[in-house]
Image (cartoon, rainbow, N blue to C red):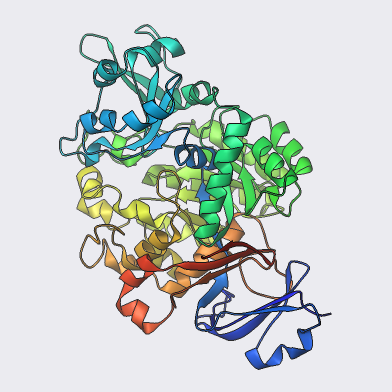
Length: 546
């Protein structure tokens, strides 16, 4: 059978388990799948009268990248004209940065995301008062950069029905000042519960256009697949918008593979309906997502011992779902053979989640499809690192998280616990599977920053700290690429992608920089200036550099 397209180059990295280097090769593609990967002088037998041959010379060719942890709704929304995204240098600066959005959308909600008070020059929480002064007559909501906290003005609080007497849902809070007055800061489950009402004013057409913009950005980064992860544990609040994907696929506007992970609940009927409705190959439901704790910077990640800078006696965070409830849900999913991915940041959350996975495996065996995974995995109890490989649990990690809060780990956890934070190299040495992603919009979707920080343990913007944060946990570029392709495919339960091998979908990224060259290893900053030349989904170009 002749190939439809042949993609050739001198630096092809297949990401197969035995592949450690790029080599000259030609990728022969028919009906969207790879027929063969052959030596450059051996593809003549695949060339027919209509075969298109594209020779990329010394460009770098690899499997399409797969972001293993994305919140697509918010990533699309905050990168669209419907909202804004910024860090800000202070509370006042954040308020000022809302002005372009206010001009663009003169009525209705003002919505933005990205503030991190611990990165401000004066690291104190903001309040409703600054927003009230600038916008007394319309609702304003600013979602934090870690997607765990809302900052609201008084108009928004009234619009949402939150008063001084309101009782927050379990696992959340409405912050109050010393007089008992709402400050405008709403945390965790309480914030997550309010978000659907805030974004309800956007139409399906507006949201679909926002998704198209996000998909275009993915393609421009060489990303051909994402795992769209539930954002919130409460029923109906996961923001996994299958209706948007269905519309885009119907209109032939879907330019990436979508692996959906709705919230694991006692009632699994939505998941099972979606499994039937979206069998792939572009849109499918690959497993469940649940949440066991929060984030270290807000002392909501669940630790065995209290935080080093504890705010009160026994300050060690807490589970967002009681252990017994999490166990029951995971065991129910395991009985059906369904994989589960659990948000675990603190060391005790990781430990208890592994205990549950261990019991599920002993009782019901491995999932029927895919693999269980833990998400984020910031700080470990040392003996737990090896357990991921032992239990066949994927470590789904986001390298840019390492440098999000300079000095934060030392401040919150102390030097001894920092030795076991984001231990990528140790996890690989133990035999664990890594899957790389961004947690977008918490971290920008830019693949270059993911790869740079994975191999340097440095921030992509500041290049700090010099020599890398915990440099012994740096991983090599081949390992990072494999985690960003094959590893993510394993986390998404998709054996049809992740490597450039016969029978796999021809999802391919082409970059202008040889990521595996000695020059790139010696000068990793070259990664950050890398350009995507082309991105192919099932052998069809979805992005071509101008």
